[in-house]
Image (cartoon, rainbow, N blue to C red; front, side):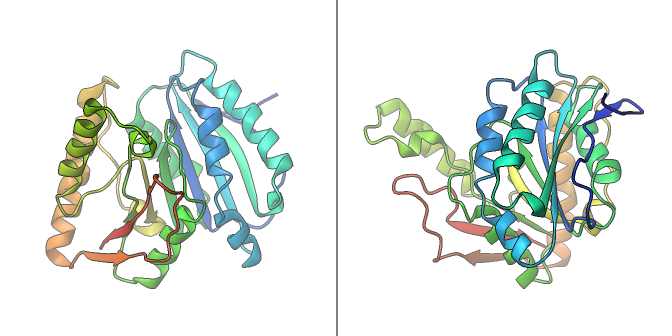
Length: 261
């Protein structure tokens, strides 16, 4: 039986140990066909082994919200299977928080203010329909945040899967060119995957999306833009080049780590 907490159904923590220092959220709405691949990609990240060797722990929440398909069930089964098979399974817990109300804004607020461990010092947020190609991506992100004490947020640079195709059509090339134009602007926050200092995140409560529709998502993006634009006027933005990143050939997912403080 799964315990019910308010409007959230949370799978139990079957490996209660020391409080986690890193908390990860995968926000999912009707992603039953994608969530398995995303979770497989996540648990291939080296961050879990690195944290284990530091004798610290992490937690992973798949935060499903308002799903009308089998996303919560698939996520719970996959997370349980992957944790049992993972070589660093003692260093993390993986659970599903199924929120009845649809909307990423509400899911974000629930994770930051209620689900994530109060002791967590870094929060990762990611979408449920992405793949993280380079195994050290998340570890590079958190170590960049640790090195730069002025930084608040570290983001990756997203890449379309088209970049990995050996033969690209004209449509593929146009799509990739458009993406590069979008990424040319400075001070961006990629919402697909980023990490933020927990103390900074917990000072933010995103405006609630009453309709849980794209208008609400635009409101969330606008709010983030205003928040970090204001912050960047007070503190300089730092860009740290990562020459040590060795992404698989043809699929560079993370060339630079951009931090905002």
